[in-house]
Image (cartoon, rainbow, N blue to C red; front, side):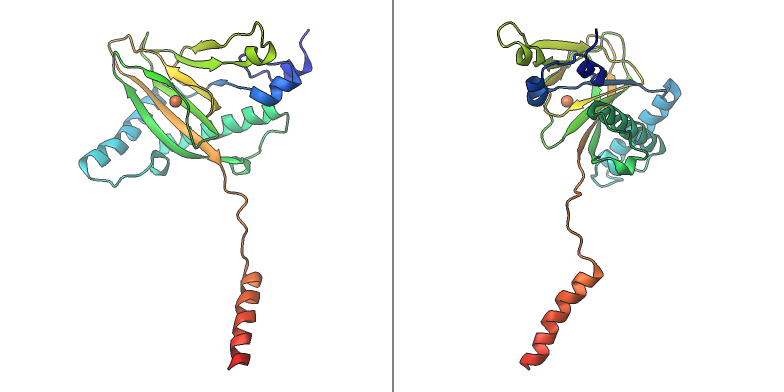
Length: 232
Ligand SMILES: [Fe+2]
């Protein structure tokens, strides 16, 4: 029988079922098979690679990929943000957002990763982000699995639980995302070709900024200026 908690966390590769572990160390990991095809990926790579070529040749000033004017990358950003919005809402058991503007987080950085044969990325986290993820553009066979460290079993069962390395084979058109604190790595590219993906970080929006409206500003200016007149 599936517990309500497992049902709620249906997007997890592994769901936890104790309230304590839920609070301490839920490590959701989401995998989305997008409908973006090989032709889209070809155009996406062409446009995004141009961003780096322009900076390399001095034709463009240094900037983040998220500020780049590329139709395919903008489309990918929309796919990422709506996928993340839906997944997090399902996970939190709240209704899905009706538009991207409703999301409490936003993309703060993105970059292309071109991993040559023989290379790998050691276990790491993404500081200064709340969520992070990757979209796969070109994945030759045996070009390195994505893997993350799952410690939830230890939280549930401190005596027998073990930390596990969960491997997620990458696939062109797939999108993965997870909390930025989750330790992860990219295993060695054992193919003879480059492995190409786009990685992104999301941060919480600065939605607690107090807005000074016209009336508030008028009151402040007025109270000071009136005093200046009286003082004279
Ligand atoms: Fe990473």
